[in-house]
Amino acid sequence: MWVGRLQRSWALRNGALLLLWLFVFKIGALVEYTHDASVWFPAAGLTFASLLLFRFSILPALLAGCVLSTIYTVHAYDISLGDFQILKAGLLFGLAHILPYAIGANVLRVLIKRRSLDMSVIIVLFLVIAAVSSFFATWLVLPTLVMTEMMSPDAVASTWLPFWIGDMAGVMVMAPFFVGLLNWVQPGAFPQLADLPGLDQQTFNARSLMKLLLNALLLVSCMLLAKVTHSPNSAFAIFFLVIPHMWIACSESAFLNVSSVALSSFLIAFWVHVLGLMDYVMVYQFAINVIAANTLFGLAIPSLLADNLKLRKVAFTDSLTQAASRDLLVQRSAQEITYSRQDAKPLAMIVFDIDYFKKINDKFGHQVGDQALQQIAQLAQSLLRPTDLLGRYGGDEFVLLLPHTELGAARLIAERIIERVRQVTIAESHQLTASFGVAGLQADDDFERLFRRADHALYQAKLAGRNRVCVAEVEHQQALA
Ligand SMILES: Nc1nc2c(ncn2[C@@H]2O[C@H](COP(=O)(O)OP(=O)(O)OP(=O)(O)O)[C@@H](O)[C@H]2O)c(=O)[nH]1
Image (cartoon, rainbow, N blue to C red; front, side, top):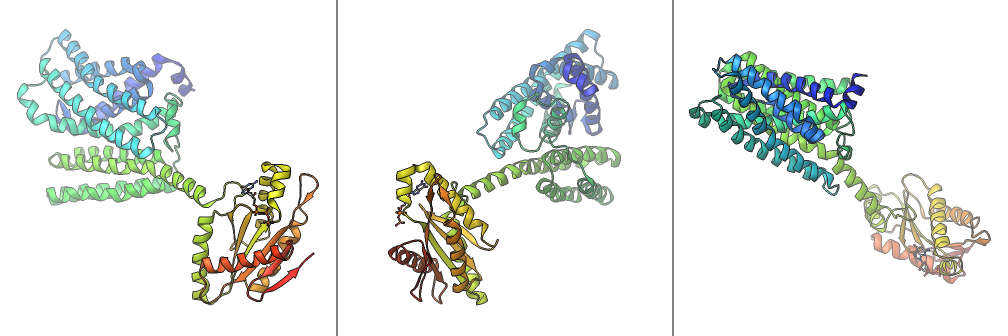
């Protein structure tokens, strides 16, 4: 019910986002580098994600968040500023923080709307936009803080890098998670997101929770190691997290993928704070940024796999008859011939072709011809074993590859098909017939030689009057009429 209200009311949405923004701002303070810079600033990710989804309608919440967080900082750190100066500092901080992310989010929005871009390109663009917009945010916010006397000019040199890393981690690591979360609360706020695979699937089950738990255990172990050994070298063990994260990226939904990176980055901030590992915090931040960038590419895996499957289907299936394409036929035949030879098993090939197909086209039209091809393919397919392969060699010529089949058995199969073909009537009155050539694998056969013999047998069947099966080698012709 509350979700429905949030979706309908602009004011409620802004109010809820303000609360969430202040909450994540406060969590960011867990890894404060100075009072002006957190090395993990998830609020930047929320700013970016909310601007991407809700555009300028969310500005009041973001500006209010910046003003309130400035008031909080001034009081928490006893900075002596008057009320008007605090308000001015808050508003200027807001503008400096929001502007670069508004531009970045809008550029990404426009790019995502171009449906021709594939997921891996969108991810690269997002990473570049995250790095560039957080860099500009850093160099707009810091001078603003100096100008409003929230920060001493001397501190800029030592603060800008952790500030930038903190904002960049906030956007790179947290924005995809916030996008998934906001899109769940308000589906359709940015309809094109539905075209990106899986961000809308909030599927958590026992197996995915177990993976998150293992990930969290590895993370804590690595950080405890750094604490116990007091060695900056052991802090680098955190890079091992790339393994469980890639595992999650390859095996779970996109939303779980971005949630796991967000969770790891939160846990890193939490344990840095609890274990007092601030000296190594930059190592951890670099690690989580690298891991996030890596695992984000996991979002592209489902779409790449789907594209691959689609391409394979197009390349290996004849679109009219759904039989195997000539390419697949040649490829599979070569494989099966090798296996047959290795295992000393027989293999047979049948080549068949509709009789007087040209006349059917001429008399009833191409569409009826196409239907005849489809019917013949379906009929042959229904009589085959799963290990057999039906391919369309070209025009009205089909090839049947029959592994583990003796020549005699292949002939019986051809006879069974020819019998069924005779029962097919097209254009209400025309009865179809077809001719068949059968050949068995011989010692020095490759696909070409085997096909040539089966095709020659087909030619013999045509010469002998069609509507019959002819077997190669034995030169045995059998009229079946
Ligand atoms: N409808 C349709 N016709 C096709 C397709 N591909 C090839 N053809 C036609 O199929 C006919 C093939 O004829 P042929 O196999 O050469 O000769 P035929 O008339 O069947 O005569 P025989 O094979 O000697 O019995 C040609 O007219 C092609 O234009 C297709 O995808 N759909």
